[in-house]
Figure: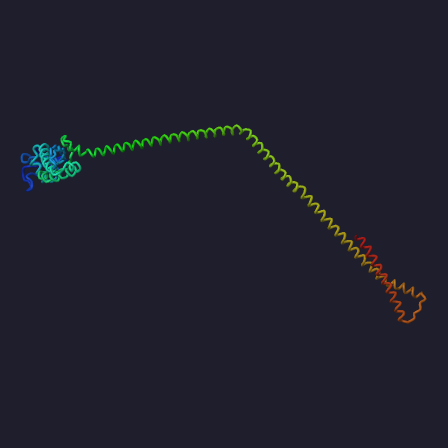
Length: 366
């Protein structure tokens, strides 16, 4: 073989011939390729994939009871160079068959040894503990031959129809059966209760449905009756509304007409009457004032006339006195008395005339 060689991802390439490292009799190549000289080098491949081995072993427990134990081992060649070299030197010619046989023998021996230190009860209850102890015990030997164990699982444990395991399981089976019967009875009771509850709910549902249907029918009948009466009632209501609307319109028209009359007739008439009254009062006041003025003027004129005529009156009186045959007893004083008397008489006449004129003026004013 010559040229450039590349191993698969789950393979280790072993190149023998030529120089090698001190810790390996050949060169180990993983994950990459290498050039190999022809005739001077030899290339072989060792699988790093997972392998399985099944074992079935008859073991004797601590109680001298025989048990048939079946298990399965998952293993592979470890990835380090030392493990690959150890595995290659032992299994390279027939890797799968030889590794499975040797691994089965190693685990069978440790399985018999550990089962012999345990009772049947312990093996049944603590099966994982048994597997862990076998795995730990086999780990050193598997490492020495370059193998790595991923898992060891106990598949079955059988006493070969001795009935021991069955007897161990009997109390548990009885308890399980009892619990199952109790659970079944309880389930049946619950089912019966559920059935009764379901029937009760169905009855309630049917009753409520009947009530709802009856109520629905009553509502329909009521609606139909109201619909039958709706025509005349609606007509009467509409007529009443029309009458009410007409009355309201008439009232508003009357108010509007009243307002128009107030604006067009009453208020102008009142204003005219007030104007006439004011003019009449003003005319009466003017007449009265004129009358008063006239009376006042008449009195003033009369007084002026009397005053102007007073000397003439006195003169006439004096003339009369001169023609009269009077005897003055006390001389000048007597004459003065006579004159004063005449003047006094003139004033008396003047006052009488004034009163007479005032009475006439008052009657005129009234």
